[in-house]
Image 1 (tube, rainbow, N blue to C red):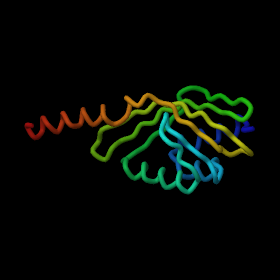
Image 2: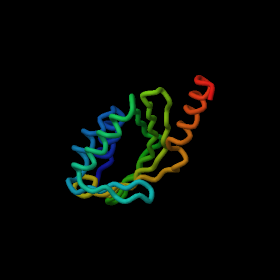
Image 3: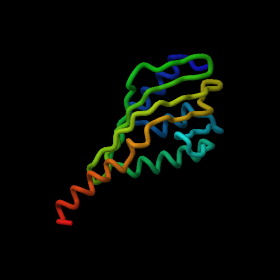
Image 4: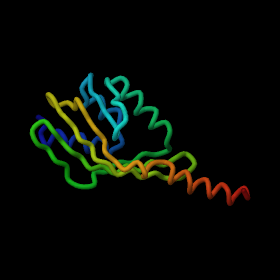
Amino acid sequence: MPSRKRVQQLVEMVEQGKFVEALQEFYADDAATQENHEPPRIGLPRLIRDERKVMASFRKIEARLVDDFLVQDQRAVIHWRFEFTHPLGFKIVLDELAYQLWRDDKIVEEHFYYDPSQLPLSGLRRFGRRLSRIFGR
């Protein structure tokens, strides 16, 4: 069962932008994460590799706790807001809930719930309109 203190440590590390370090510290070797209805990604090495890919795709990623988090028995729920700054300057804001199952002070399952309409198409459409104005298309 995770303590509030342990979950708070995770929140602080993520808010500091230490995403890979948080995976290494707080996730079990066999951890599985899943986004909405996508297939789960399994195993700490894969989670770290995928996180590094995401980090390399953006100029900046900021995370913050939106509300207080919940801890009950083996579960924790965290309400996050992430802001991703693309190398071309546009931003994507993602508001999500992370529903976690903990075992021995490590996350073994995490399911992210968010509205997919927040994701890149809206930011890319705005960017595309900007390019169209610049290049007259």
